[in-house]
Length: 152
Ligand SMILES: [Zn+2]
Ligand SMILES: [Zn+2]
Ligand SMILES: [Zn+2]
Image (cartoon, rainbow, N blue to C red; front, side, top):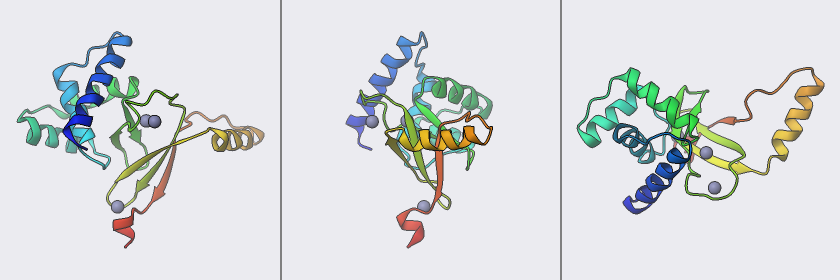
């Protein structure tokens, strides 16, 4: 991702944080930038590493987890449960409604692609689930995939 788009994403992220009465502190910003620079989902340890490389700043892993919690609450970051790693939302600067997100997650290199759906897939699935007497708690769909490079 180029510097220009990272800057515009960060200013949008700042506006979103302010709207929710939260501050995008310098450390939170650095963690988000490190995530935006990666097309792969990263663990808290890997994030601490990239912040160290990028900004020459050491953040304890526990603090990275707390920062990730705030960023997830602000919907700037998503957790990929199938690999237990985190990825920056790729729709931060979009104005359309951020409804049902589908994620293609490469099982090998943990590259992630976030795709927006119109929600019908989730509704059909939800209907089936309710017929079976279950309630869907998490509408995030993570698909276990292999990316082009890893499949080739
Ligand atoms: Zn998203
Ligand atoms: Zn979008
Ligand atoms: Zn891959």
